[in-house]
Length: 407
Image (cartoon, rainbow, N blue to C red):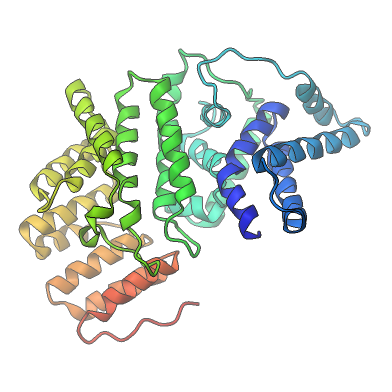
């Protein structure tokens, strides 16, 4: 894609698909039509310029392409095409608390007939425009495995005739866990891109924050919604300091805090305080509290961070949470104590695991092992910025050789 089209794609793909799903009631038709529209934009916009309303142009072009295709197929007695065409002609006005097409599609994809992993993966694909490889990275599974999950999820929707409708208010809480997971993973992919030349995808971060705000307005009495919004705001507030002038990643402890967004930090902290007053903790609220501790002026209260990770393990006893807790233990009790915990984890395909282990090995003086762990982390990293950061860390290990060239 050309740069203007790529920019519009990142900003408008999810909304365009969501609108077309509502219009035609079919995922495949919506996806194909939107992709056709962006292909047409690649051909036309370099010569004609970006239209005044690029989102409107994409949606209108996609709808017209889809209608033309369905009319052709309907003349060949394709019942599916006729049904989709009828759906497009007679689009009902729906009374619902969910008024945004993207939120509507998220809740639709989070139907109970789909397993939780499929709900999240499919919504990431449709709303965030993430590639199969990016979603696979978010789930820590091989790309072919994720491709199969997406195919099966679409087939399930088609074969079970799952309706594309906004759930009623009574159904919304049951869908909430998957919806929050979708927004969280979209943000994570934006804040720490799994592939490509850009380490931070601000379009995905902004979209996740927007969706979290909409959810908070939709479900104001759900503490985990407020917790997720607080977590995203506290993290997003650091975005300007996360990348240096040369495009390199800057770790949290090395960031220039004067570049943090004070308004977002204040809003996030206030949400954390409200969550604490409610006394109904959940994993997103606890993660937001950890983010709030990290946003306080240094030195970091690592004792409080460890306590919070202990609470988080009660809700999500995963190896990744244990890895983060081990970092806090290393700060409190020394690198050897943290390393003993890290070595008990099974995360062989997770670059961050090897990077943390490499740092702890370096700090205890096991330099040869540290160098090997850094090289493994470099091999598993999906972005050039991550590899460059790890290569700098590797070069500081005594006796280390430079990493092999990528590819």
